[in-house]
Length: 307
Ligand SMILES: [Zn+2]
Ligand SMILES: [Zn+2]
Image 1 (tube, helix red, strand yellow):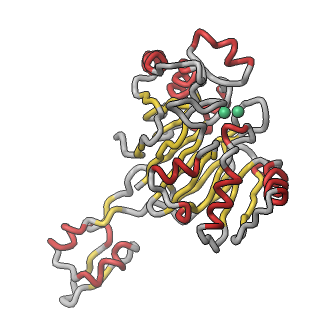
Image 2 (image 1 turned 30 degrees about the horizontal axis):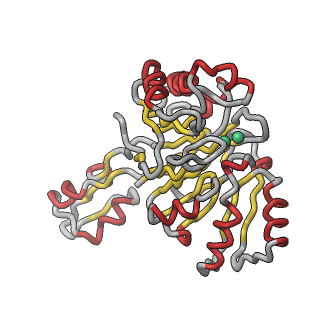
């Protein structure tokens, strides 16, 4: 299971229909919060993501629409009884913001908040890894220091062909050895090589999150071949100049980046509150990159093999 669930997708201010940026990336039983706009903890409750289940938090930059929900969320996690460490990847200045906020509001965390400044990592380097997934830092071009994140599988194991093993009458107790790539010898002396029951691993899947950025071709190499790309789409293309001035992108520019990076699917998000309907954005992007979808609160996108 590798998916992203959108919790918020509006730019700058919440609207009647959209919340500021936040999403949960899940890889098997691990859950990662990416950005934490105002109201994120209510969105987590609404979509039944248990606060205690969050393994780490990644913050792209310090604009309020990506971070104003964080002090409340962190203190609620403490009130819910979290007593094990939480990793927080974010621009260095957030540490002082949080320390001051907790001090002035007499808030205390009963767990260890492990703060990891994103400035410590060169763009493109690995910031976090588990035994089966790595998170890379992505260089975004915004008005302030801003990083995206690429979640990518690695170390994928070959597929074990259970039915083939059964057809060869291999007892279950040998399965683990074969899965690890070892030959086995059956009671009748027959040797079974692991290749007979293993097929190549499924393709590597990845998810790239580009929160706030102007049109940036240097980004393309870093997000190349992503299974799914979330790219901001604050404006329609008739506001291209405004997008450039504010270091944001248009839906057409997001689609162009998706096309250059040869990703499989594009999700547009971070919509300006000026747009009542988002259909024109979808149409504009699909002219350049047909496999485009709109982020929407609650919507889940699964990383899957597009063949
Ligand atoms: Zn923003
Ligand atoms: Zn921003």
